[in-house]
Image 1 (tube, rainbow, N blue to C red):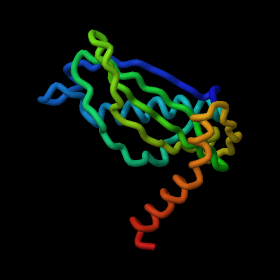
Image 2 (tube, one colour):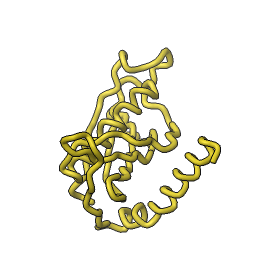
Image 3 (cartoon, rainbow, N blue to C red):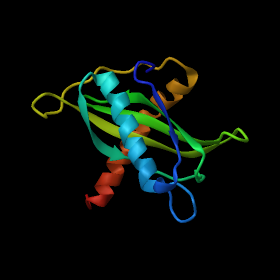
Image 4 (cartoon, rainbow, N blue to C red):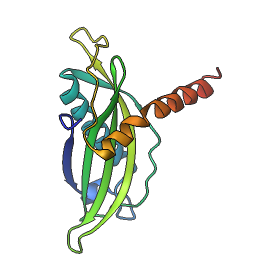
Amino acid sequence: MSQSRTKTTKLVMPPNTNHHGTIFGGQVLSYLDEISAIAAMKHAGAAVVTASIDSVDFVSPARVGEVLEIEAVVVSTGRTSMEVFVSVHSIDLLSNARKLTTESFVTMVAMDEENKPTPVAPVYPETKSEKALFDKAPARRANRKERMAIKNGI
């Protein structure tokens, strides 16, 4: 899993915030999608597309002047898909206060040169926390399928 691990830091600036001085949720989603794609491409060695973003619950706001630490890692794979775990923490650099902003699972699909899904290698958990994420992947996959069945009236 460590091969796909990707981290970035973003400064929360006024143009990316609402009238409360907190970051737009859509901006955070954009960061989630981008870092997930990078982690998935590192794993697959191929271009990827976003298939789904699981529930995104905003736990705490990120304010102007704080930084976002965003981390992603591929935690599970299917035949052509990869489940990427993303965590976002906001940090006030003046006080060193750190808080969880959101976490989510993003499903990416590897694509070949003809824009067709292409197989990906499996992942192997290396740490206790990675193993916990890996072990629960089948339940998350079943939950996604159940959500789609409900949504589609099946």
